[in-house]
Image 1 (cartoon, rainbow, N blue to C red):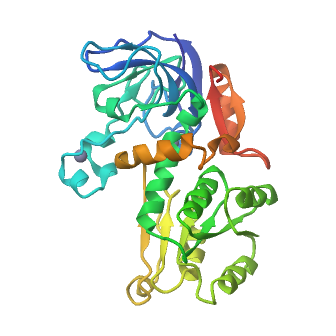
Image 2: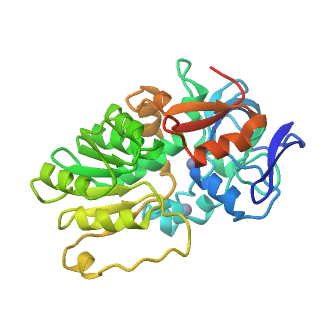
Length: 349
Ligand SMILES: [Zn+2]
Ligand SMILES: [Zn+2]
């Protein structure tokens, strides 16, 4: 089969590799669509892990083969794939910190080599630990919608951690694909959302996706505007969807006493920044983090995406073929005014 194999920093090559075999508890999926995700871009650009491996983890496609012990799935079933699934039976899972579970941290979907998602290939093998992460795509929905289940899940997990509801306000800093999903999912919880970004086009998208107002994030005017819209207090929470340290400080200063800041994009290790710790203690403003998906939200996410209450189709602006993965990664890394979510598409429906 064809696959885009990562060999080192910025070194992606379209190659012929063996189609993966499967074990008795596994499934083979023919990939139809795979989203380009910032966490993969980071690994490709910085060479964080040794090659060869095949990236791409926001995958959807058609099951073409199942192992003899698999009874729930059949060839022909259209599925969205989760590449991390928790054991649901350890100290971390019992406390709902699934992303810290040792089983969850293993990647259980692969096109070959060290498992790394494998979605930039014609076929992926879904290993036993990830079989519970398969989600059926209804007839009326697209593979691309199936490929968006995992990113929507990561955002809904963070929204649930914030615990906001009607009467609350939130600032979403950054109106890229992730920020727009926050807008919509917060709005569905009854939260009044303000969005900021540096791109005029993205500010317009922000309104389409459920922000009640958006503000240009340059200078200080947006802070005054958000304060004035929140009775002078500041929002109840802020979400930082870009890995910009100054934004964390701005948001932490802006939220009301007792309000929280959610860090969603600070995934790079080794970044430090001074914080006046009394703002956490005396002002009771915690900094929260959320990473990856929550298995227990899988059904809820499927319902939101497939009912199109969270309509992800409008997030997808650019499509590339398997042979164009480097271009897809480059666009996702350096978005244009009108680009949002980038997909690698092998089959349309
Ligand atoms: Zn992702
Ligand atoms: Zn566990």
